[in-house]
Image (cartoon, rainbow, N blue to C red; front, side, top):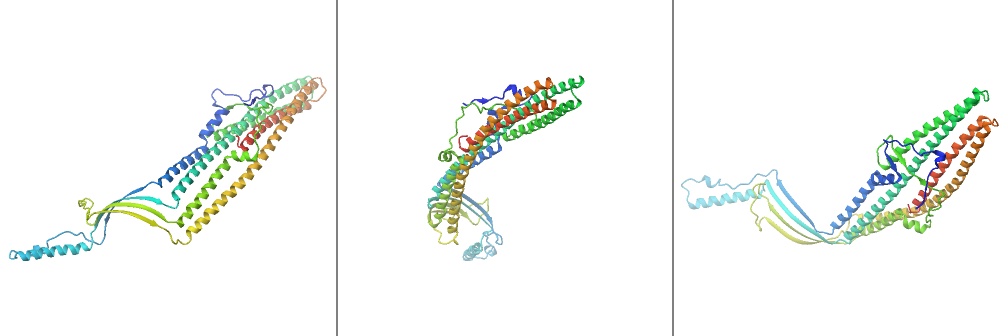
Length: 463
């Protein structure tokens, strides 16, 4: 494991002023919470859940489909038909048996003629089952597409986690820099106040003029202004990190941790061989799966040129002359309809829709291939750029470290010379300012180096 870079206490004191009531997070806490609560990660997780569900749905197309239908209808414009004895009731006591038989027959004929005009109320209940026997491979291709989609969503979730982790670490490094900057400003301000005290004593004793006193006071004001601005930036940076973590704004939150030590020499050089990088990058794997999905989609669209074979069966109860609460007892000959069928369907012409869908599917495949080619070139450029940035950051570390050493020595000599009257106070103030700027530049270079190394790991797929 690489050693961590701890900012020298001699240079900047403590990295952050901790409040006993403040919530404190380490680097590990930041990454863990960000991967759990980030809205980007949560959205990608929901997309993955959806993708997994589509696989189950695709398998469902291979199983029988069973449907229940029920209908209760009222027909307008038709009267209810009821049996009556209107003709028979017209007979008197003088009618003989033949008259009564004839009247009853006419009653039945009247009922039959009325029934031919239809009933206002009717009921139908049916159960249908169908099984696809052959559909030009659409079912199996649909399952494969669903699995590829699930894999794409899984890779997208992994890529999102990598991006969120990188954003969280970069923001965490910025917070550490601003914490250090606050400490540097406070140390410089303390030193400036000492210089002001020297200038005040010299002015009161007649060894220095009022101009030296004013310059020392101006430097204190400048440092105080810079400190206040840095503290405000510090609060914004902390809450920007909280936002990346998916947490609400907090006033007193603190973050504790270390940066990687640029001088440790224990960090492994990332593998920048393009072939290996492309094999590790999630984006290329996603595009490979997308390309596979588009190929399968072409097969599905071309399947419309071929026939489909479906096995089905149904059982239905139908009664056209009953109210909802007056069903007749099931009569297998009169009310129940049963059938089993084998259906073969094949489209002969649909206005060239199938042809155009195949063209569109092939076009989508080509667009995915173009995206893949572009992504590969972009990744190669990203790796080369990340390597250059990291190498430049390493060179800047050495330069900034040397500047700090020279600025410390310059301040030491300037203080000694000032106390014996060899240099004016302005030179001493400049020396103090130079040391402050050198420390800030060095800390900025360390943060840039850490971010550049993380970016290189991310570019090579090793993050």
